[in-house]
Length: 403
View (cartoon, rainbow, N blue to C red):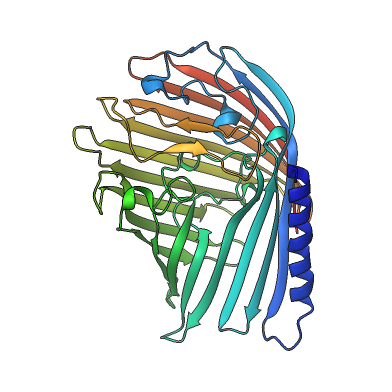
């Protein structure tokens, strides 16, 4: 069966489940369906001839194009002064959820993509799938089991939920987890404070297998948040910490990776909101290698001109500190996975002393409820000690429709 037939069968089966669930009678709570379609056009220009010299350690991220590093497929990745233009599909997502009163709920999000036309992912892939139960203790504790978006950091997994088309380098190189497979407890206090506590396979879900190197120790993390403000102008500040056995070392524990993160989203005025993130991650190395410390940050300034127009200035940076240039065993890299066909982007984070910076300007126009046109210009500056710096320019236009 070819790829298109597989995707078509998947869509039909998915909607058969949707229709069947929607027709169930006598079930307390309610059925919900949602999703989005993202399509657009992208232009990329690698503005300096970095050649292979910037690729310390033989990796391929130094002179990768901005769009390739952001996950888009089939853009020229590592060519001097390369230019590329193409119409692209980000993804189609379909989601279903069903609530059983105030006690339990299930949710499944499925994505569809095709790398031949730019999608970061290929075929049919599972984004989220979990069940939740409300434990009647105090004001109620939510217990979640399955695969879920990680409650860490500033950026959301879906592009539609961010202020720019592209994700930051912190997200793209998995400096902090995107998704987790495990269990999560959530509790909201009455004074605006809430807490997430999770236990998962590892902090590299979708990159490392859960049984990688036979390590027994799971990843453990938490986020404590403080929330305030009126509806539509909610503010939040969150502090996260996590530890995970992401580095193989031939033992049941391996070498530990530690992560500390602070995220915020604060309304400065009725039109101006300032969001961002600061992160520190340390990856302890195998015996004989040098540990890697990574510092990173995001500053995201969004201004609403009126009810339909807004614009965002965004800066993101990571500083990689490993003077020995030895291999980082955590697999911090951009990788897209799928079922069939297409060459996956796979750019390992060069382990040396250096800075990777991104500057973005992104205006957007709200056409109607659920429909938006967003554009972005992004400038990437990559520099490693002892290697030639690289500059890339990317321009994107995306039509985002959510339902």
